[in-house]
Length: 197
Ligand SMILES: *[C@@H]1O[C@H](CO)[C@@H](O)[C@H](O)[C@H]1NC(C)=O
Ligand SMILES: *[C@@H]1O[C@H](CO)[C@@H](O)[C@H](O)[C@H]1NC(C)=O
Ligand SMILES: *[C@@H]1O[C@H](CO)[C@@H](O)[C@H](O)[C@H]1NC(C)=O
Image (tube, rainbow, N blue to C red; front, top):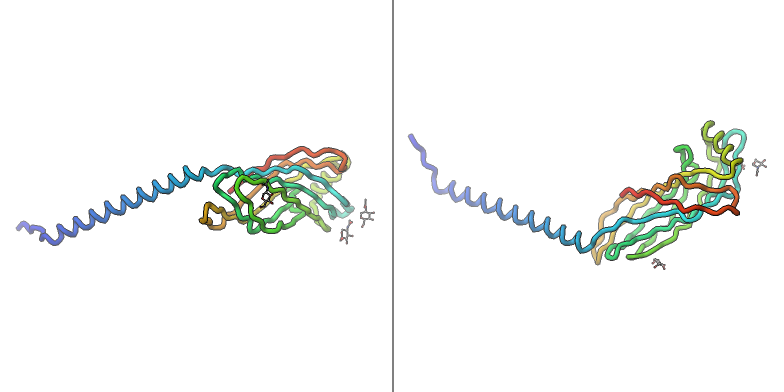
């Protein structure tokens, strides 16, 4: 009752095996190329710090509406020797008590390799409504002379290596806490930011 396999299905099996081996070899080759490219490019972390910060025209009304202008200088450092960066869309926020009090955008720019770029941010709070607790605390901070703020930056960036450009990625920068004096005569202490990419 034995039903010997016809030679046709044998050659089919060999074909399947050959395809599997070729696919495996391709996968290994691709993996190796990725590794070699990675070793050649050696991506390094981007570094962001807040170098200057000041508050102008501060006015917090009885009904907890805030007017103020926040000025910050953020230093963006790209330490990479092979990667340059397109910043296509950049948004910056000042947060207080997890609420946005001021917002601005930064013009798109290109950052070459091994480059330091200083970004001047001018963020305005115009009749920004604060919660009771936040407003109360901000009044205390005003009389104490300094306040802790969070600066958040969200950017759409692309990497460029040689002629190759990556897809868009979202870069999130958090500079917290950033201590700012209400009086401009006091110096500003550099703040190091966390980067999420
Ligand atoms: C704050 O704004 C209110 C209403 O516009 C004004 O009456 C007050 O003088 C302002 N205070 C300061 C310190 O500018
Ligand atoms: C805040 O600024 C807006 C627009 O400039 C103005 O109408 C408002 O009176 C200001 N409020 C305070 C408290 O200064
Ligand atoms: C960083 O790149 C910008 C834009 O190309 C350029 O204007 C600036 O001089 C560069 N800075 C340094 C330190 O190379």
